[in-house]
Length: 185
Image 1 (cartoon, rainbow, N blue to C red):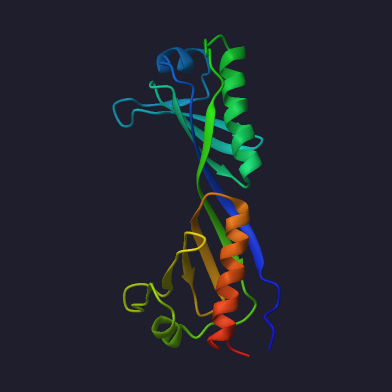
Image 2: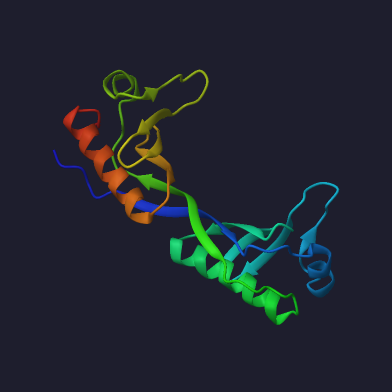
């Protein structure tokens, strides 16, 4: 039996960045009233974009964390857009942001049910405690990823830093599930 091509959807890309300088967050809130900044609750300012639809945390240290992007390209574009908007709004930022993708989360539908009990026994670095959590947690080494497997055939892949690693992780997992006969016909 061959596995149908899995449907993979990138749900969230988290990227960090630094402009290697101090930033005055109070000045940003004055110039950009739509930003959210509550220093008594959290030290970062939230700068939201409509396109790409993201939220970027801006810290006074000059560090940024962007969430919500649906691709590596979108996350990089979002950080650059925030920096450009800040500059256009009169915030002095001398350096270009150094951007690093930290985590990609994807949802996957294999299109076939998975036998979780035997999978927990057959797959190394796996944990399955259905009374605690309904999915099997599998820690993949190559590529480095954490896969959450559900009996429905749906998966969550987290921990990769490149979209290509998501697809490789899903492919490798599909092969392992097939070889060990852990997929329902």
